[in-house]
Image (cartoon, rainbow, N blue to C red; front, side, top):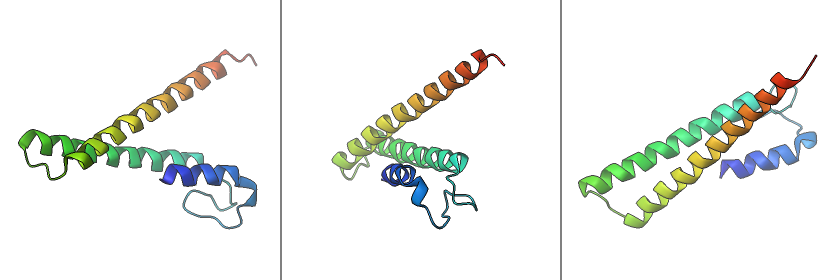
Length: 100
């Protein structure tokens, strides 16, 4: 859900009046902070998925639907993070190709 908020902040970057946790003192978005928060959120989702898998393996599952939903969310989140990594690597390689 915070990804939607991040997108809204990016769309309204010129209308930011006061800094929040993802902005620096000048009101500009801090990409490093946003990336770190997203990685931490992704890590928490992966941990929830691992707990759901462990509960399923041991038979201590309370709600199979919630466990499947958690596992699916972790899978989609991991795919997104891999695509972000791939795009960053591609951008880095393009920068290396740039002649000065």
